[in-house]
Length: 434
Image (cartoon, rainbow, N blue to C red; front, side):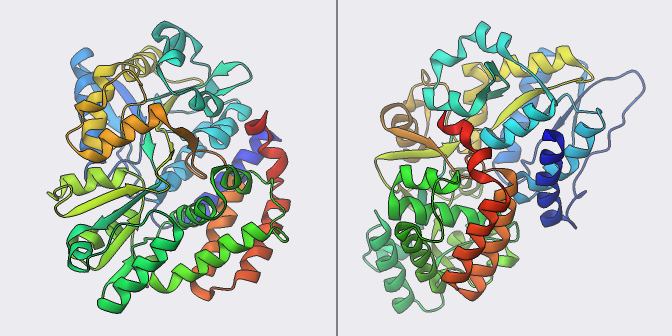
């Protein structure tokens, strides 16, 4: 039954990403006799591609003669890759390594029997004592560690075009009220500029706006309850207010969001077609790779300032990996400060290791992120942080896509309530509150 639940959840994602499924995939073949390391990831945009390539270079230096076969599948915040990967895991033909989320989505892999524990690697590196304790909740199940995280992505960032803000003498927003005020001021002064960028060609990014509105309306505890089924959606006044706040933003969101990927939406700040963008700090890697200068071309503020919200990218150990020693060596490498600094300096994220000093980062945003991760309240985000289940996340993407079009609060709330019940969200998320 657990395997069927994982299959159905990922088939929801599969349906969302049909048509882009096999784009960019590398062929799983090579010269006879070559030692191969097959790895799946979805890092294909500017900045993130360079970051994973830097890790591949480091790994090959430690393993000369190994050929890395990277089966990249672009788009969807990972949903396209998951749709391809699930078939391989079900047929017991896994790669040596693959990029994974945490929380509910990681637990699905564990429950389906697709992973081997990585306790030995955690013990040898004393990993648990070098990361924020909040990560343990989303990475450890049934008394075992199941994956190795290599970075920490903050997602409660509001990025903004600094030249537009300077020209209009605006201050970056600090809460929902100032966000809406800035949006109104930008629209009034610059009718051809979208106050808020968004790309929903991969529907997952609508969930980020959903989480933002729940967070800024009800606070972090409320947001976590919304994402794990502990809210009476149909009758909760705070949830209704959050959805009304979402609706009030829609007129200020880029009107052609369905045509844009996350990085293409981020580019709207570079061209001046949009003024703000609620997005995780992987967009920083994109901006830096595009030659944009921090606090000259763009700025960013965390909202709220006293919270670090985000998720980790990680790599588990697939059961039956074709080259288990190489897979183990890859995971061990990811625990090192050397590998994490190499990756994160390019990617836009920060190391998950808390003993790497914030001073290593050349921009003010990651310096702040690394400091806040060590000193302020930290929580996982909704979808990639694994708070919500894959089934509920898939349903929510479709509901919010419709909501962006019709702005019907009552209809959206009703559909969300039905989806949470149908997907048994509360019971399937109980692990988070244990």
